[in-house]
Length: 198
Ligand code: GLN
Image 1 (cartoon, rainbow, N blue to C red):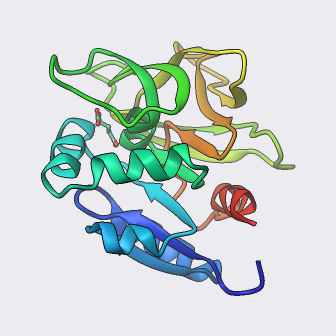
Image 2: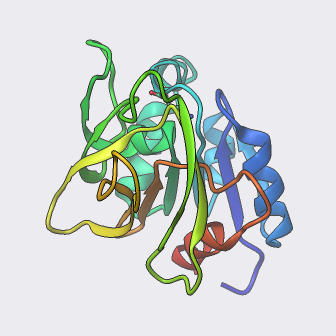
């Protein structure tokens, strides 16, 4: 791509600012997406962490749900982090009864999988495509309970009770992490996502 790509961050709910800041630092045009006209400008989209049950309702209310689903089906690269991973999953465990997802990733995610007592934890993970481990921050995070044959597993938890659980995946132009790569100064996971846009 010769022009600077425009990368949107779904901005109706969640930790939008951190993603915008990181994308801006990486030299793309980073915009918040609250309306379809903003989505139309995007060459890629990030769906941030937040609360997936609120996110899908707001996306419906603001007429963004179907447009995002359609664009991502048509090949728009989309990166979901935490709640964003839930939004991209074809199947959810422990969702609310009415909870809908955009889907696209052939995975089952378990919401709040790491347990209610341990709301958040941190750990170093090997990440496919990166030479050095990523320091991952998990906040009421989901994990991937099961992944279909076309899903590439990018990272798993390495230690503790959740060892072996899948926490980062890619399938075609969709990518998702259970953790929050936008927190802290490490932009390597975002760079991998931007590679999908070129
Ligand atoms: N538990 C949240 C949900 O179900 C996700 C948490 C997060 O994004 N930090 O949407």
